[in-house]
Image (cartoon, rainbow, N blue to C red; front, side, top):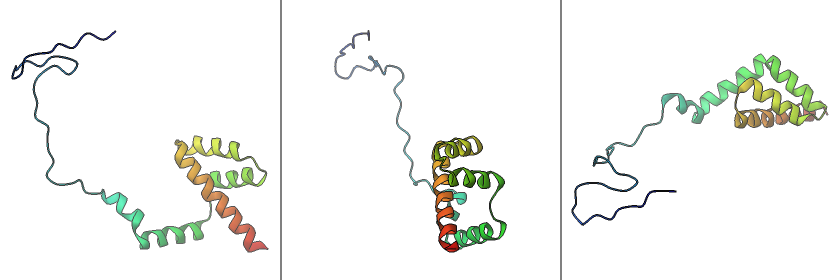
Length: 112
């Protein structure tokens, strides 16, 4: 159970209650934070073009080939678990799975 909060007279310098301690002034930032330079390339059209070109020339990585095989036989959940082990993050793995599903559908469309 929480301790009771003491009411102190107005203008009393001692802080009491849950947030008791030294009085501090909040630090104000004059300039807003700039975006990191590494994040700028994600919005850049040229960088996207270069990434797509490299993907087209180099092809898929070995783990991506295995994921595509899993997606072909309908093992989406197993593919997601496999990607998560490789990439380490659930949201990144879902994004990669969707990307590879789109790649698989596009390759099926070009064959037909």
